[in-house]
Length: 245
Image (tube, one colour):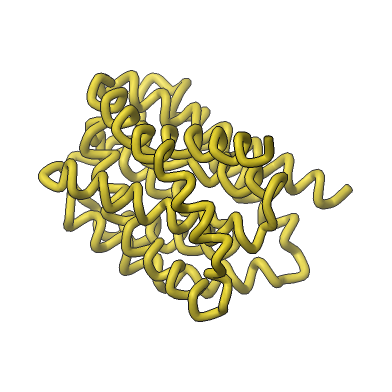
């Protein structure tokens, strides 16, 4: 029964990631940790992230905004140590609340405002800010996605370009994280076992996500992304409140 739930969680998380380009972190690790040790769940989720990113990049490499992805990755490297410091700081709850309210506030503004912030071309300064923020969120909470999603919606990327470009970011980032887990001795046989068992459900979810993604119009997709960001912010807020209680 536990394995059935693990496979269902992996299918759902993979489908979310493949359809929207981000968001599986909200589903995968917290729910997997209910059935398998967190020290297995986290490397497993990262290994699956590498698989998703690799397949999507091979599928849609022509749709990747390589220049944008490169700047985001470069800035992320400098943000990760800050995130790790926040993770071990004496005020993690306050930081989480501020991040949650910022994400929720910007997303609601973008959903409700008559005119959204739109970038006609890449803004290097904003790319660096979003990449740096993604590194902080990734280092502290394993949630790199929100700043990347915000930049992609401001650039008005199509659903297909959005999905492909974010995977070009997540693939190297996940490979670096996976190397760290291996170095720390966390890539144990159980991780490999669950990974191999989950492939028959994860791979179809990747292709189903691509099918859904390629049928989304830009305006509708942007709304879905902002609703997803509101959900991310609310979950962060709930985690902060729960941790304080």
